[in-house]
Image 1 (cartoon, rainbow, N blue to C red):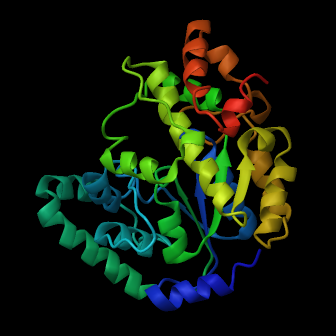
Image 2 (cartoon, rainbow, N blue to C red):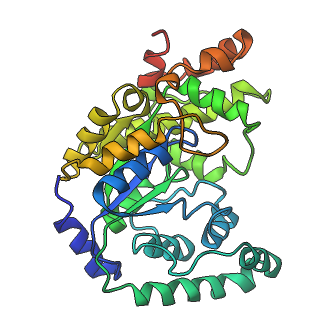
Amino acid sequence: MSLGGEHSKSTATYGVAAGPRVLVSGPPRSGTTWIAQGLAEAMGAAYLHEPDNPDVDPLGWLTVRRHGLCAALEPGDRDDAMETLWDLAFSGGWTKPRIDAVRAGLAMLGVAAAAPLVRGAARATLAMRRHERGAVVVKSVNLAFALDWIDARYAPAMVLVRRHPLDIVASWLERGWGFGAHLYADEESRWLARHVSKSTAVPEVPRDPGPAQVAWWIGVLLRVQELAAAAHPAWITISHDQACVDAEGAFGAALEQLGVKPGPSLRRYIDSTDSYGTAYEVKRNRREQPGSWRKKLTEPQVTEAVAILRDFRGAGFADRLDS
């Protein structure tokens, strides 16, 4: 898979830096950070972490206020906040470190007053970077419903990360995460109505909060990702579970599709992250990660989550639950 021609075409249209661009996407807690940082390390590329996350970047706050956490856009849609965010992201992001005080000040101003200031700063940064050609790997967990929009506008190399759904459910519950209206909005409902057929139906949202609602939302994100991968055979899918078992093989296969020959930097990265870590560190004993839900979830939680996930008829992850 070449990283050249399509990127040059997108650059000519949008003025984004011409170096190879890679987008790594997957549900939250599916291993996207570990995968994305490893690819960036092996490519010698800049790594940009979640530019659409309002806890990381002020532009993320503007898009969340407009769309909720997961924007749903179709190819050709115009959206000033998303365009500003991703034009900047695929050029390598801000030239200066982001400061918490700045984000707090923008939040106090409100969207109407803050938006022109943030967009102006982003466009000034973008203008300074138009002639840079460095490679960049961008990671997001909020793009499930806008992958085709990203692909049509920027033509990055797309890498989708999948993980066993029960391991994702366990990780969410371990952190006290739940399902809420800020995650699932009317625009996602409309997206599902357009793209999901009766043969690949999505079950109704469970009424009771807890493992069932978390499992439902993870099922939605994984199913949308499966449909996107099926519609775009050139996109790359990497299994977090397989990468934990055979890191060099899984990373190497993805890099080969990206046209990159793995070097010693990949082995150093794999070794440096294969240790015990906490919270949001990428350090983990990777061989303990696949199937970790067996230690983290109670039997009632497993039963509740599996009942929901099996209702995603036609989904690959539902077919694999028994194993």
